[in-house]
Image 1 (cartoon, rainbow, N blue to C red):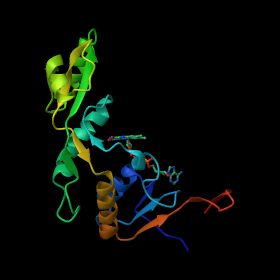
Image 2 (image 1 turned 120 degrees about the vertical axis):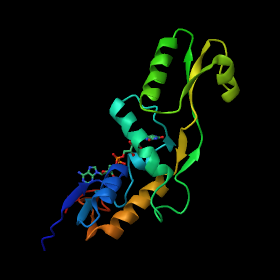
Image 3 (image 1 turned 90 degrees about the horizontal axis):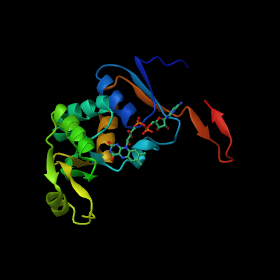
Length: 183
Ligand SMILES: Cc1cc2nc3c(=O)[nH]c(=O)nc-3n(C[C@H](O)[C@H](O)[C@H](O)COP(=O)(O)OP(=O)(O)OC[C@H]3O[C@@H](n4cnc5c(N)ncnc54)[C@H](O)[C@@H]3O)c2cc1C
């Protein structure tokens, strides 16, 4: 039997699940996942921190652009908040002040709430730091804990609900004997 889809997405991690969600309204979407379940790889290993403090500029802007959706997803998307306050502190040793300033500039550049803290304030925020050569830090109060599974399940549920037809097609499985097989 031949199945036609408006969109075929390879991989049911966070990238594929979110693409399925946003593409699915009125379209047929097929998500192809080679493992037996979504989020088996990177998504399932996430440390669950939402921060725009990312070195890559494109990802930093994408994270900032995602903030509004995570903070206020559509009605029914998630049963509890996806984000909960945490804050993030990046510290620098004496001699690394220029790198710290560059980091702060990057955060401010994408509209993040972030500011410089001196060594005393960094120690107050995180007393386990060694004070010997601590120059200070950048405090990002808007960094949050993100419920990765809640977000993923919201995307997948939403994609299934609004796609004309959606399916999970494991394209690759390992047999019980360990041999690879395609389908
Ligand atoms: C240890 C760790 C900690 C992290 N902590 C954070 C964090 O705190 N905050 C944060 O924002 N990010 C964090 N990340 C990064 C984040 O988890 C990843 O950027 C994100 O999950 C990537 O999602 P993805 O969908 O691109 O990849 P994945 O989740 O890896 O999904 C890719 C999917 O594609 C499938 N696939 C691949 N090839 C094929 C194929 N040929 N056919 C069918 N299916 C295929 C795979 O099986 C997999 O399910 C962390 C990553 C790691 C590893």
